[in-house]
Image 1 (cartoon, rainbow, N blue to C red):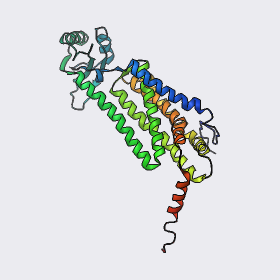
Image 2: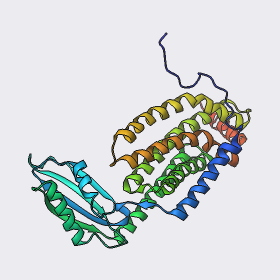
Image 3: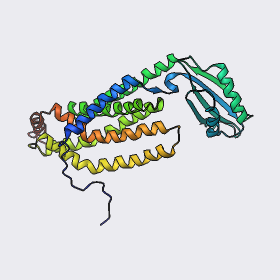
Image 4: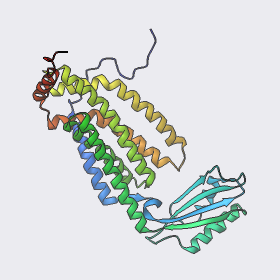
Length: 325
């Protein structure tokens, strides 16, 4: 018999409602705390949301992002983002980098004097470097990006709710989406608490969290729907416990393997994707927790009319019973 790794026993009988005042209640308190921290401390917006200047450099010398960052950090600048640009159409001796400088003190853009200092510092590092273009993004565009990001998260949540409603019941849809918002709001609260940089890559991470978390929740809901038909007289709480126990091994395996991959990105990925990796890491942890302790609790609080559902299923199964083939 082949050996298989299991992160949970084949059959478990854990009562996930036993300490719901601590698990579910704690989640609600964390959401409230996240809102308060977000409102009081605010977010440490990055260049995407604060505005600033983007400089495109070209040189015959290969781009050394680390050396460029080290040189620019000595100047009185705000947030700095440096990325190497790759394009198949570039010549072999054409090395392009993009430098993004955040505006300071709510100014429209980085001043010409500051740009001149940046150019002087980079030319000392690489005499062949030249500024191919310099573009500025003002606060107005940045505010539009913030609104677009909020809309993206909101529309995605509504689309997920519609999908769950069509596939299951409206109680499942509401429970699933509230569990998703639990994951997103607590993640944003952590970024506000520690004043981590919040930019468009974090929005991408939040949208990824929505997709990952609902996938985990759908697995539990799918087993719950099967068990509701299978165990018609069993109390709803017991059916929910059974469903989570039956999917526990799959949930742990998926989450841990994802955390290993994201953890590697977090440790070895460098500064450029560290914020993104951290947001995904926290989202996977919170998404796994909410699938087990939050989503089903909300469905239980709302309640389900199982008698009506059973009668409807029986009626549908007998609809064509008296028709001759």
